[in-house]
Length: 264
Image (cartoon, rainbow, N blue to C red; front, side):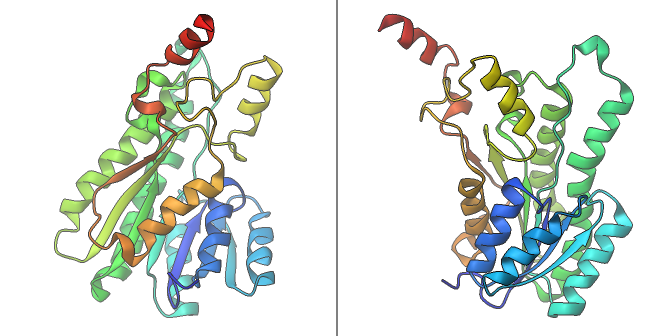
């Protein structure tokens, strides 16, 4: 497989979940990788890539810190000669709190990581892509950025709505440059970020797939496949778009599955 042969990609939040799955998939498709995460286990992802015959460099740092993002982009260009793909995937899932218990500090941190981090990736990745008149920037948003009412986590939903809007407005900001910007909008995905929430749901006897028309939650590898499409030439005329991977949950009646079960 060689859909990304000869290309260099940066993936943020690559220590686990969607980021790690994307790193392994992109490497299998020929990409050279610079992987960034706040935790040192990002090096384990790079080791796994290298063990499979790929090329990967790990950076331990904050993908929402401008100096770190600039350094990571510089590393990609210095080591591999160019930057073709930037996947702004890093994000955080804040605790679900009643509105009265949410603080400005909580909101600021969620927006900093989930939204400002994406902006910084756009800013610095596009700067090195524009002279080459090509490049793909991928942003991890969420289905709750489209349907906030389906989330009991207002700061998270608001941050992801901001990502979707940023993707849309970036097509104008990058008009005529050849740089494409798109979003992946996952639904419920069992990953490192959501592990605790999934564990709590299971302990409470809650089936998180019950209101999803496909009857199951997603795995990180399925979201990585969407990212691969957006990174490759197969999506060469896709720009300013968001691709939803939620098993149909966004447009489903959340009462449907429960109603059907009662009628059985």
